[in-house]
Length: 144
Ligand code: ZN
Image (cartoon, rainbow, N blue to C red; front, side, top):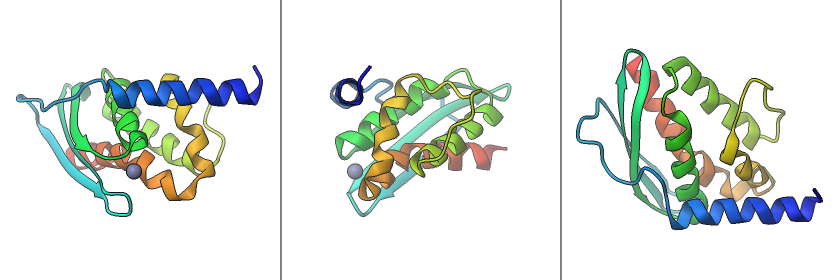
C-alpha cells in the first residue's frame, strides 16, 4: 500500500474511534481509578478498570478532548482488556517508544493502535496520544 493510502486509512481509523469511542463510561465495580489531564491541549480522562487475578478484566473511560486523545483512549481500553498487568505495562512502554519514533518489538500486536504511529511526527500532539496510556500505566503501576 502506498504511504498516502496508509495515511488515509489511519486517519479513518482514528476518526472512527473518536466519533464512536469504545468502552465509554464508568465501571461501577472498579478497583483502579485514575484521573489525568493534558494541560497543553485541555484533554481530560477518567479511567476505571477492574483488575482480578492479575488480569485487566474491564476498562472504561470518560473524558473530553481532541480526537487524537479520545481515539487513543478508545483504542487503549480495547487493547488492554484480557491482558495481564505486566503485558499491559509492556504495551504502555511500547506505545511510548512508538511516539518517540522508535521501532516496536515484534511481540507487540497493536492492531488499531498502529493508526496513531503517525502522531510521532507531530510533537505537539504526542501528549494527546499518550494521555490514556500514561493513565493506564499509573493505575496498574500502583496496583502492582
Ligand atoms: Zn489533545
